[in-house]
Image (cartoon, rainbow, N blue to C red; front, side):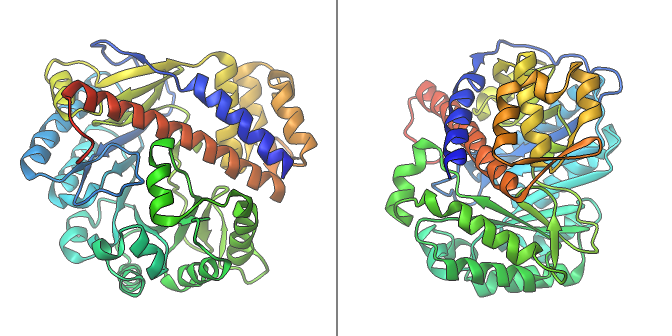
Amino acid sequence: MLSERLMTLAVRSAGKRLLHMTPCGDEVLPLPEGNKPYMLYIHIPFCESLCPYCSFNRYVFDSCAAEKYYDSLWRELAMIRDAGYDFDSLYIGGGTPTVLPDRLARTVSLAKEYFHIRSVSAETNPNHLCARYLDPLSGLVDRMSVGVQSFDDGLLRRMGRYEKYGSAAEILERIRQCAEEKRFRTLNVDMIFNFPSQTEQMLLHDLEMIRTSGCTQTTFYPLMAAPSVRRSLRASLGEPVPCREAAYYRLICDSLTGGPDAPFTFGSVWSFNRKDTAADMIDEYVVDYEEYLAAGSGGMSFLSRRLMVNTFSLEDYSRRIDSGHLSASGAAAFSRRDLMRYRLMMQLFGLGLDLRRWKADFGCTPAAGLPAEYTFLSMSGALRKDGDFLRLSPRGRYLLVAMMREFFIGVNTLRDEAREQVLSSANLPDNGR
């Protein structure tokens, strides 16, 4: 659709400017602001093997390097506590956070000791849905998110995931067993749609597997590839077909939420919660927390209108923590207008923009603060007013999917640049990072 193409170009252009980082020196954490709510993100950058399309900071698992990393991470958590921060929510991403479950459990316990953590979300891979990896985390983690991507064996093979994590049938059985054991309040299954070689029948099969899996939540991301991995994606999966994205998204929404007997409701524009469950946490924590602090190599923070990226180098990370400084290596400042754009995108992504909070924070309406953006969304039929909230129409939900896709591609590009800095400074090829 024309509106989606125009919006894609606008977000892509704005992202290049907004996500331009300048180097950070050896800084300390800014002071927290009053009673402002903050969310804590912890990054664990180790995986048993690396997926070629992933732009997150990740290293092939090495036990010695991981033990050293956790020592630095625990010291960083103490620094954050001593700086006066508190959090009620913790999200742990990677990498594969469960690669050392005992160390992960110790990290969660430490965070709960230091802060008033009430909810914990963590990520894992299908091969870790077993007692060895999950027993240490039971009672500590509230939401476990498992990356599946597809239940099609052909796609899993082409992504290199079949050999690593097993067949679709094996993965489905592990999810069902984990769901039956009720280890976690929320069991989320991450999926990807609009793979180049994915047919409508393959997507319908994925949706049927989700409905029968017993998971309490599922997230269907559109394929998002940073420029650095597009060549490898074309070689393994084929040429992207962007014109199908809207139709595939409608198919997902209709299958999961359409009709009176639909099993799921919307949690965000691409996250779906099973009805009559407590699945209220989602991957995109930025919906509920405008400001968040990241601990660990490769994490991203947003504090005091500054987006900061922690160093991707494990050696530099340890050095910075040992010297008592912030682990961020790059930062970008947000103007008032940038912050309004960020708020508009994230709250609409979460299905509702709070007009009262907007007025209190910015002293204007969204239409007055962002006339071009508001006019575009209104004329596209994306918005409807619901009391003190702006909501999205079905058409608007897809526009936000496309908008977030471009935003996260920009973030992935930023991660690629941070990784290249590590490789160039060490004069190393990209063969394990």
